[in-house]
Length: 390
View 1: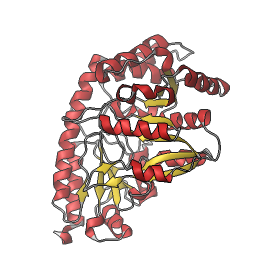
View 2: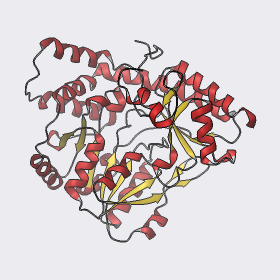
View 3: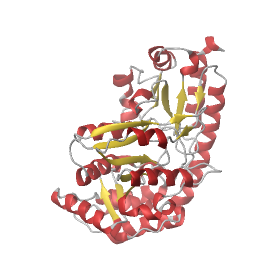
């Protein structure tokens, strides 16, 4: 397949395309859906063929495919990220938002403070609040369009009621790939305040040339006694609808606590998601990912160049992910005005920055994981919608 092949997802019960009119007022027939973080690419043939084979077999009974499933995860993490993972450390959840919820349930209590470095993926705050925990927002520094961590300020914020910190690595929505020194800083922060560290690394395969993602256990191995890792093939291979993610727990005592909650709730993985994961985490899958990252890099460069031509708009330079984070503060417009121009004039549905927490108020997030022709169209529409600034 070619990543340029246009796929019409309208009328397929697709959240991103069929839901944008109700949520954003962007017409479904002429609008561009650039909000939900899945791509408009078909999954690789190695995954599709596995699912076809399962369907052809026609039997969907109980299975135990842990050996092939966990073996594939171990191979992928070692081959792609130089990270040695024990099979016993791998737990399967219904996606990573569910993984966050399970970690909150297993390791914290209602009323506990959960630290977020904001702005950050909006689902974190939602699941924290739904679990009856308290969101503690630690705002990052926006240093001329690049997020930096501000541990001195955050140390002063801590009250002792905080029990966990959630790191998004690579960062969504800013696209940062954290350095070794920054990851060490996060680990030291967690130790100083006796926090469990939940590291969401779902975007770790989507890293652009010149940058290297470091898994937290490799960056700071001495912190594994308080470390919970989140990974999934969903963003990498566009199989989020299979709702299969992993909580990987290096420490045996923490594993036992998590296993006890999984058992108490009688949670078990979806076999189709497991088989699809095993198929994806393969040499064929790796080849497809490399091609996808190169394609996304082209989309990123095209989009950034267009945004740079509009005075007052600034797109953070992505080091990873397919999620562009655009700052509209330079326009001098109120949030309602620039949002209206994007949604009603340009007819583009993009995530509202304020949902990502403190510091995101003047931003919109645009999903570039789509065909080049749609990115080109979005660029043209945005230039036209803000044409009076040029």
